[in-house]
Length: 158
Image: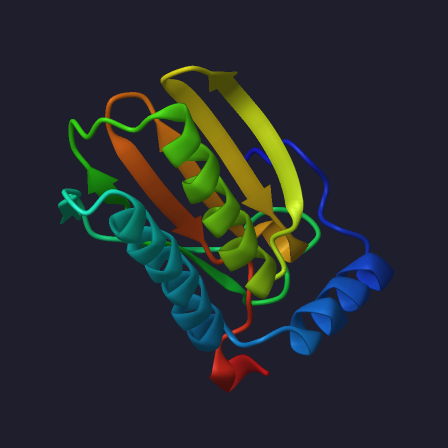
């Protein structure tokens, strides 16, 4: 089997495992990320009452295979996106929704901000944190809220 990268050295893998043990469990993190997404969609609905949210797909889980967590029996989960289709969002409304997203993401430790797009009517902002956890919010005719747990240990592996 081809491995593009050598395995994480044992001392680094042990540190990564300790980091994961210090964080909430996979199950708790899933609930926390969902709560953050709910905070954002609720705030957006308060700002734009006509919004109707859809969940176009189910979430998906995976084993964490990225370094340095690939030896830790960790799991990760992409939560189902929340999508408001064809909703008009003004720039002032976007700023309010973005602030709500920033506050919700901070509650789960996702405080690193990456602005991928920031033009009128075209926004894409990621809030990330330890072991890959993230909240993403974007707008380009549709308003989309996404979330990912990052690598976390299931309760029974802690």
